[in-house]
Image (cartoon, rainbow, N blue to C red; front, side):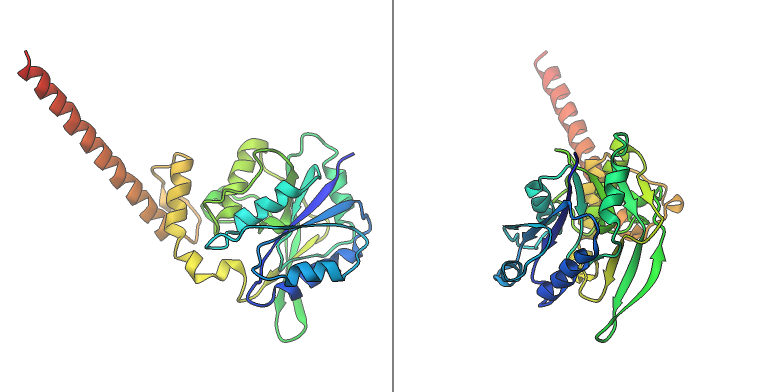
Length: 285
């Protein structure tokens, strides 16, 4: 029988790490089917999250592991660490600031993955905003796979709204952080096709607040670098920008200009080398 592993990458989160993780842990208490494991990969520099786990008793299995903290944190690396430690056949990522919103989420995953042709799924989700003391719930979303997902037009949502089969190649690319989901979804779509979407109810709640990962200004400044890496990895050298929906068109354009400039330099060097060898051959005749 398959087993679900809920994989949670954690860190200090600007002092909110313990509070956010506590909310996540509490949300799992509503789940009807307890046949799952919770894998927590901790990239914190202190022991607060470790203490939280050790001080509490939960009616489900928790596997806690430490994760080396890279200079920039790197959510992809931390998420992968939780997946590597998982023993389940079905991986359900859940970020630290998100929570489970449905008692039937585990049953839904077991039911859909009984079909061996299903490689990954997307899940209906709701946004939760922190405003004052009590969170306000709004914006229920029916996700879908957009043709320009790879370019940042992400209508699937964060990895908290997907689940997939555990496989040696189903890991996030640690060379991308802001685009970790879009690059991963692109590879999953190539491997399995468009995901099957579970839309009968919102299964997860995605946190929306100023401290969330996507609002990190330092990471946003590296978007050109990420697109440069992604385009080289996937062999993209030219795009019809007018036909693409993306909030990152300037960064994409800059990445393509760098690729074309590098290619021109390479071609110029090859031409000069070819000419040099030709002249050398003529001199020796």
